[in-house]
Image 1 (tube, one colour):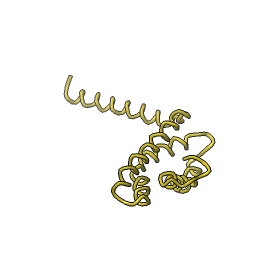
Image 2 (cartoon, rainbow, N blue to C red; image 1 turned 30 degrees about the vertical axis):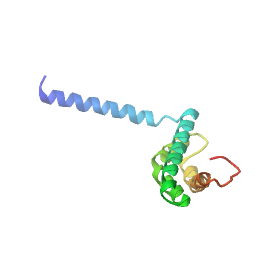
Image 3 (cartoon, rainbow, N blue to C red; image 1 turned 45 degrees about the vertical axis):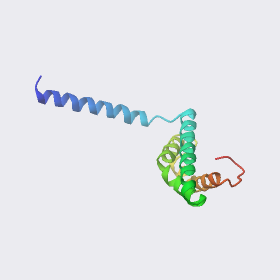
Image 4 (spheres, helix red, strand yellow; image 1 turned 30 degrees about the horizontal axis):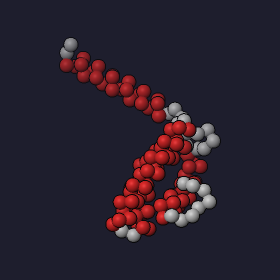
Length: 115
């Protein structure tokens, strides 16, 4: 087998793997996936807040935790937006309120609904 043939086979294999991954990302997330991603986001918020609260004010620690956990928040919201009942516009519209509730939850502010 020549080097060129080997390179072409590797490129084809990488392309096939990428296609499978992209096709999988179009599959709506199940309720279990959403719950897991929510728990991951909450865990990130708790860990980050706990560490930052030792170093700075609780308010600043809550803001830092929300910023630090942006990646897990984005994954959670992306999973929510795959639901047939919720779309990207709905998620974008409620995101600011969700982040406010997350800050309140971290600061121990009583809310009527859990985060």
